[in-house]
Image (cartoon, rainbow, N blue to C red; front, side, top):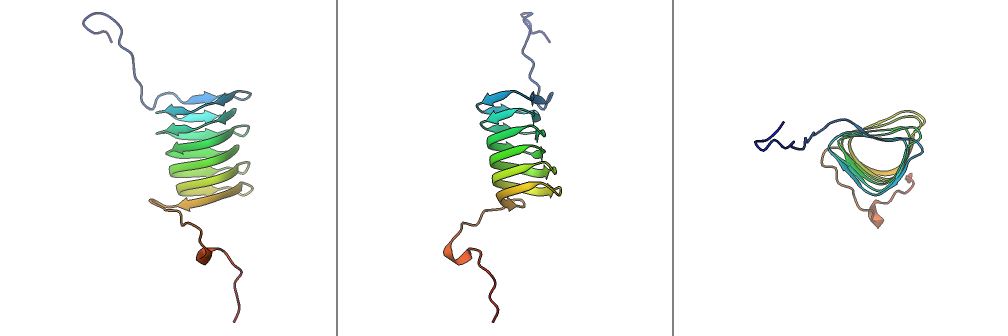
Length: 138
């Protein structure tokens, strides 16, 4: 991998080795990656990847996540945009807003989020006419 002047060229790898934030690691900031990402520590910030995001059992993200697929065992608070499948394990706790094509939830997971589903799903803004009210019997 040398050019004509015999200097090494930088190697670029798309969708390469998965990235990890290990347990007992805290990061503040934004992350952009082409590869999969696993978080077992704590992240205050945003993640954007064209791969998969995994939040381990001890993992926590507070921010915005944009990815193709996501598996969550830990905690998430913020905005979650998943282009394909979001899988919530029984230990998962989700709060915030979620936009996803497909959703799989194991019994025991906590899902306290405003959610839009399906390809091209658009959130319906709350108005007086569409707020939830108890059914009335005539």
